[in-house]
Image 1 (cartoon, rainbow, N blue to C red):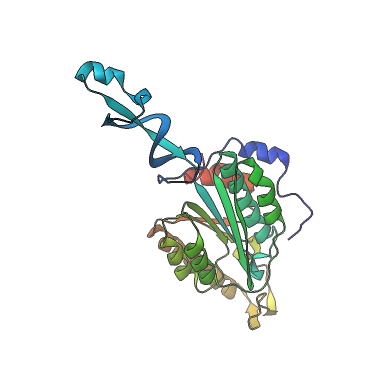
Image 2 (image 1 turned 135 degrees about the vertical axis):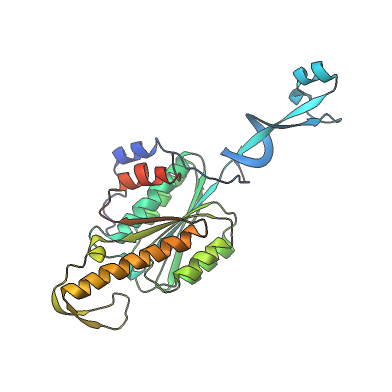
Length: 294
């Protein structure tokens, strides 16, 4: 994947500034932000009342209630706290393929969602996994976190095979707080079901972005060929006639339906995308329709 081109043009970032990250769950963060929290705080939205006791802040007394009941009550408010957005990007060799490139597309999708979170004063942290390596950067908050996030994603390279299960297990075990999670992968691994189950053991709000290239949907093949596994598997001799290509399309469709059914049954947002779909359409139309952004 190219390191030279910037991840986004400035005009695209201006479009992202009009979007906000959505979450379906109340969260308890570490700093004040812009999210509803189970804690009581000092926002403008009432949450409850409680009887006044010595030592309470008399400025929170509801004087209207005192006038009616001749008793002191304190107003409690909904606290607003940050969330942490988790970004997981598959950098196995199979991802660094296709036109447009799958890894580049995944990096841009993760970067765009991360930017939206950071611009909204939430946190964003990212992990890439592929071959024998995993890379992470510390969670950033606010616009100061944008530059390191973009630099990290722009320098991703694909290599080797990967165990999606092991990566998801480690992340689930080590993430300090749960929150919305975006997993970008082509799912070309046999352990994808167990990997998603591993993430589901924590209260992440999971979105699976299933990324394939156009040539993987409609194979541009003809005649007798030897296919090589980019991740080091055995070569395969095929005769690419119409019957074989049709069976490939049918099995691909069945596999995607299997993944979607699996995700739907576990409350996972499943989004299939091929890399010819403009990133703007993914963000403004698809993610908004799925209520991931607004």
